[in-house]
Image (cartoon, rainbow, N blue to C red; front, side, top):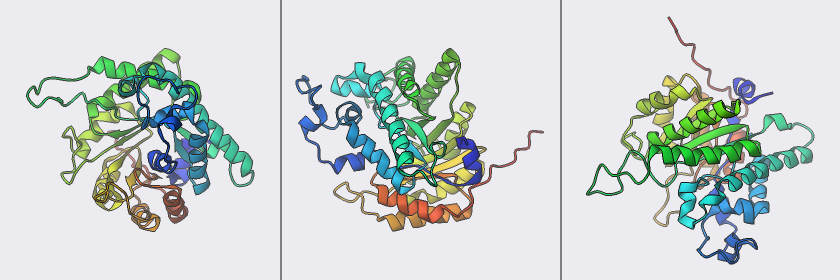
Length: 338
């Protein structure tokens, strides 16, 4: 059974935050370096994607924790694993390898989970989503307030960086490509361009999931688009799903998910943060509270894929999965093509 067949039958569960779970391990500089990079010339602490090479067992165990919590879709640990973001650590040449190994780790986690749960669970009910983050440079905005026309990166540079990332993810065995946490739609368009170019050159195709980020109460992305404008800007990619994640908690995201459910011709995804961060930058919202909000969206018929972003844990995902398991998914609209 493929992912589209499952989406027609039930609400699917996406995993929760990778970074939150990595933080629980309290890794120091040597923990990030591992043996391979023990003599590397630059600091590496905080390079979570590198852990696919230096601490693969930690990443696999996090994936399995989310699978045990009820996740159908697990994201690769590759949010910043393209050469432009990796340049912060002087590791841009590792982009392909990190994505390749990240996809393999996630695939292995699913295989091991299904062997450990031989009844009621099959590999074809679980999917690896190749996580493609927004990167740390934006195509739409200038980082220099005194020079609005300046850009720190070009469209071709962004597309080329994403192309290498996609190559690693696909060769590592992902089922879906997930362009997520989009605050600049032009970056997302570069990712879409890279994906379509890759598909043409390699004569393959995979489902594409797209998830944007509404950054404040204005209901707009950081690059200034309304939700409807964002949707229209990316629908040429014919995504499997369109959705929202990050920046907001479920309470603040509610009206935006409702709006998206009314305009989207594809499936709708939603994976909010565990509320808004407190003064210390920590997330306090409890699993029951996050799940209650998402359950209400499901009962309204607004969503097809739900999960969690910053601050969410396997406990959050377990509660969400329990709340929505018997609720019918949002029906795709019947479009009038006349």
